[in-house]
Image (tube, rainbow, N blue to C red; front, side):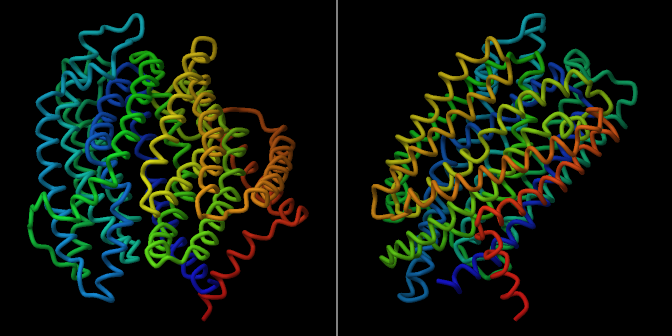
Length: 535
């Protein structure tokens, strides 16, 4: 088990490094967009349109692929190693998935007007609804092409991850972001005197094409890089679209509940986007805040999950329930250890973080305030969000997709109810708080549900660990508040100083507090990787 954890530590660092670069370039992408476009009706139209391929992909096929592919491909690898079977199963799944992706993408192009209309049911007062929907629909027609490339990327990353080849899938999104940034930068060069509001984009269709092609070509580049990696590692493929193949039927059987899971997510997404009043800038504020939330989640939690899940799937396939329980417990503990301080740090430094990143060019001080309010609400739920998703990966590794469906139905219902209650008085901050409450409650429920299976995660011990982690996080927050109290300003050098001082002082205070409170897991984890690396 020690060797396994050391191997996972090394894999985590590979994934974490790639994910960090990918997330940072993703952050740079939205910063560039904010500087050029600002927080306007055009920004809301673009966000709603660009969100549509993600929503459709996840609803119709992404959930099917992401929920079970790594688990199934990991099992196929096990059987290939010992029984020399499984390749035909992989061929059948990939062939059927590619056909489905092509058909769904074509239909999405045809129904683009209806798709964008769904994301703009509640436009803000004062916005020209006809122009808003005209621009949004034009962007949607182009960006829905991303559906095919998202699917291709999911297939290839699952193939690579199942064989413990994490590098390409972790690093290729960074290239995609750089492609998008490069195309976005053409906009002010092409239109040096442009106002870049919704009316200007409606008159100058080139703006629409550059915005839409920027993101679409980025996703296409990511998929092509991953396909090249699959070929480079000698994974042969034969087009074999056998819809009745046992592997295809197994994937569909495992994914039936996942389709319901994803449908619940998309219903909640549409509700939240419309509650944010499309055209007011609220959609853009919430979207930017969520990207900032995804940065620590992707760097910390996703890196852990990406490397743990293939091992969990193999352990379950071998019937090694003890190792499964131990690995699952370690993953949960490590996720909490890293995401709780990140959540508190985002919360206490929300305004200077947004200010130093976005308040440039056409992004105003008011836009900074609105985005920071959304971020402060979302930040409190980061740990719950990350823990919830990691626990669901545990169910998926056990080929259980039914339990995650009901858990997700519960989570989305909570999110919608809290959002409706809170948005009227608190705006985007209320939407953020709704998200946090929903995921914190759902993470606790998911842990209890997992404990009731054969997985022994020792909830009482876990709660004790979390109490120590939260206490250390509280010390960190106090240290940050004291250290930054003399620095005034929410933008520019002042904001940068607050963030740097807060991160350095807060990080040091957290590590010291962990040691004082007897929490040694992080030190042991890093030591195991250092020891292995020195051999």
